[in-house]
Length: 169
Image (cartoon, rainbow, N blue to C red; front, side):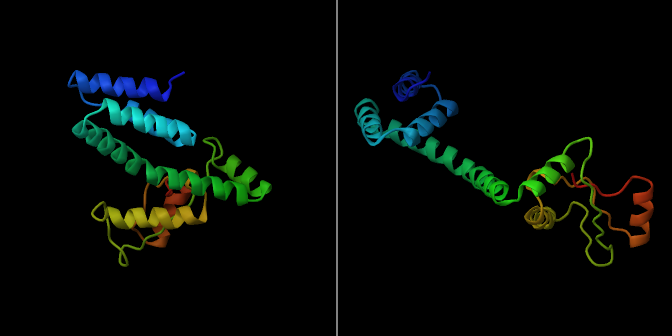
């Protein structure tokens, strides 16, 4: 069991040896700090203030904010998925869990007419927006764009019959 004091000792040791601060230790520190009681947070801050010099405190703070900012987007996505799972009816979640498996995968055809939109890897922003728009309709864990056709609807149907259709699992 790793405590806040253990994590702070690891950070202090890394600073004393002029090693880079371990990102995992900063992550554990942030997690302990978030889960600690008010007195635990206060004692951790007092300990860090007494043990670490001002530049070292700034280094730890900078690494912690970098770590927290990078994980905010993931936390929001996880929260949205949890909210969607709790708000979806049980039958819908059962169907989605069956369809999202490898064996029964959920497939979609996306026909982006070549004369309407032409992006072949040149506009990743548009591809991301398309993925986002589709993920609002379905569970984001189900979606994976394998290929987007830029052909006519006839070619899309031909590809579908040949099992080459655009699949979003």
